Length: 313
Ligand SMILES: CCCCCCC[C@H](O)CC(=O)SCCNC(=O)CCNC(=O)[C@H](O)C(C)(C)COP(=O)([O-])OP(=O)([O-])OC[C@H]1O[C@@H](n2cnc3c(N)ncnc32)[C@H](O)[C@@H]1OP(=O)([O-])[O-]
Ligand SMILES: NC(=O)c1ccc[n+]([C@@H]2O[C@H](COP(=O)([O-])OP(=O)(O)OC[C@H]3O[C@@H](n4cnc5c(N)ncnc54)[C@H](O)[C@@H]3O)[C@@H](O)[C@H]2O)c1
Image (cartoon, rainbow, N blue to C red):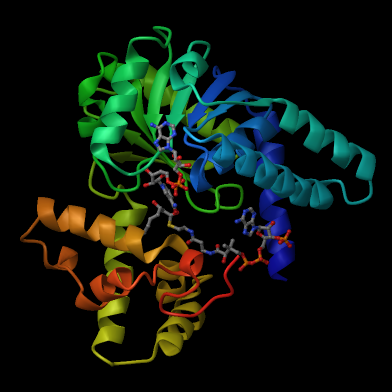
């Protein structure tokens, strides 16, 4: 049942993407990790020319491998009875993705640059100020940040009217939402182009102002944190908290499973940043159990242990 639903989602995403038109033809995605490789995949699936950039060529090789495997999964479902067409779909999409370790060079022909590098303001500032000097005048810059302010990120560029947030969700090929974030100076034309591009890559777009966590994370982070506090107090077991939210509220994953999935270090990083910025907001107060798990290296699925234990990949 689940698999059928997921197939429906992927097929619907792709067919809507083929039908949509976008002014953006050349996309440069900076950061070839978890999110960047997913963004590159959905862009190439939608027929766009993509350059995927990372500082590490090992990361790029790994990303290409995982994009190939994920496209294969999509093709298997979309072209169930036409394996040759499925193979062509994968080959064509892969051929649209080039890789580079030079962000400046890779941005020279971009209509849109989507940044998905480490969640660190000064690293993002360094990248965008470098690109602002080399990218064409018309190029739109966007950040996939989870928790940082779009206005603060774009403070270093001259093209503030051509800057916004494009916040995708993990796993990108499967999650149907894209948050399109308008900064204080994002122009109407930039906003419209970002919305059209989001639809073209098969996502349902919602609009949000530059407010902490936008819509999803502003609700999700306090929810996950409350679940951790509930568990910390000993009010219920981890398994029961997760079962409760899956069966009682219809979520695909429980809050502690989801915290392990996104990474407990990420949870802590977001919480600490917001606590520092908004010390009077009790929802953002530090959580001793979360701090302890992170200090012990129990970061969730990627570390083999968080609230639960996992087979290390
Ligand atoms: C303090 C809080 C901190 C918040 C942090 C914020 C982070 C960020 O800013 C916001 C987020 O992203 S928040 C996070 C938002 N995210 C959520 O909330 C996620 C909530 N969870 C879910 O929606 C589901 O559990 C999943 C979709 C993850 C898995 O679905 P399932 O049904 O349980 O398991 P299944 O049957 O195995 O998979 C079905 C099919 O899906 C496909 N597929 C799966 N993984 C894939 C991947 N990595 N790649 C590509 N494709 C992938 C695949 O086609 C597979 O079929 P196949 O048969 O294998 O070909
Ligand atoms: N992981 C999630 O669930 C998720 C969801 C939505 C948004 N985000 C946001 O997306 C961004 C990326 O997150 P991720 O999970 O993909 O991280 P990741 O660690 O998987 O990937 C980041 C990649 O960026 C590369 N990188 C770092 N600095 C670079 C630079 N200057 N130039 C080029 N490449 C550079 C790293 O080598 C790494 O491969 C962050 O801002 C994060 O907050 C993450």
